[in-house]
Length: 376
Image (cartoon, rainbow, N blue to C red; front, side):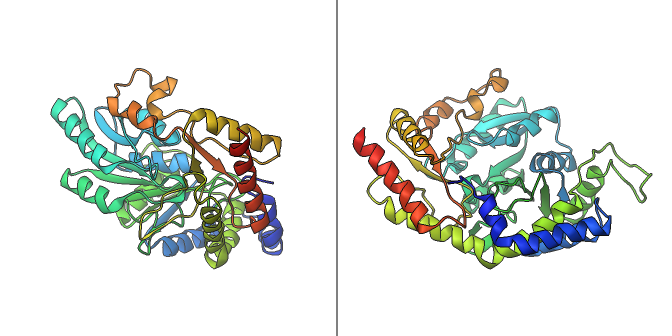
């Protein structure tokens, strides 16, 4: 059994994928070109924004967004304490200061109440300029934008939506990657929409920001290839990845998003009364980058993980350390609430989920977990 079964997905999409790869090879065009422009247009239409700018990976997408806004030394960027390090490392790379914020233990996304407190505290201290809130759509579910957006607006901040895991999720029909002033995503193969290598994208309704992001991703290009108006970087989505994404986006829209939610609903039924299942608020749709259950203690979780491994059932701990406990951020001042919040979320275990997981495989996973809990 695979955690995110890319082999099974390839077999299901093999004719279309093979044709796309061979067509790309035959064309001789491997960088930029019409295929990249086509996937950008399709992605923007699906998300519901005016502009999509693709790039080399999701981390570059975050970094380019901060560059567009000229974030740097003395700026405070509010980042959820529970996320992949990319959400925070790009802030430090720009010379700004990440301010870690407690997350909601039910959704694992940034806690709006904690965010409001942290913004007020930074303002009162006067040492840093509050500039940006990074809201991460963790595990496939959008953050609580109903509450986050008013907080951002009332404090005059910019909202950067990190939708690396959230692509395809929605709130009352409005899709993830459309909530931020700028939003980003990743096409890492294991993401809800993944390519066959690295890839990323930036989404925005602001034409000037989109143009600047594209310029910066092409060495700060001006009106021609060899005119440069800014110090940029080399961050492009190659044509092969764009060709793969075109095939996979169609499958994602046609059936994969529905299929992965079918698997999640089956898990919810089978786990009823056994473990704490993921919380999805009313009106929210998850794209299920991960399906994460919670146990009463870390010891129980670790025992279950070991028992699953003995049966060749993969599972993952996302994430073993929150941002405020990462060695690289040891010198960063931390709020006491971070440690309290960590105690309520570190008992999670992510189990296999993907659109191609069968009912029999889901039952196998659930029964193995029930057996582990009974035996121990």
